[in-house]
Length: 158
Image (cartoon, rainbow, N blue to C red; front, top):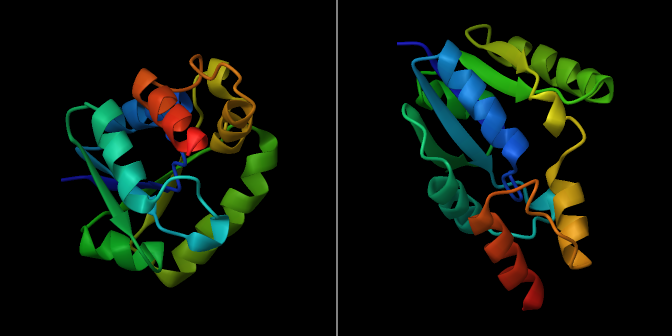
């Protein structure tokens, strides 16, 4: 079975992320969306909240949702994954992602990094932009599912 890990912070998950997940399941038998609990990124949502949101909006066959701490390559090994999925929105993403792919290859030659581009309508989109627009009460409904809009409104009103 060809199993891939799609890691990320997903704070919050966007339509761009969901597009990458849909593209991934065409290539792999199973995709694990793995939420990183990286506190240095100062996420708006807790890891558990992000996992729950993804489970609510990602009803795609052959996809499971999980979270992890530590090195991605170690987590991938526990999942018996052979590939890591990374989304590239623009050329500016490539340099960082390329460096990470090389580091991950050095840490584990068993893993291959696969770069996927989202649909062009999502190339300008990232979670930071969504959080910022939402913090000023802007309409983020074109960028995230309704459940995410609801949770952003709830979280930002606290």
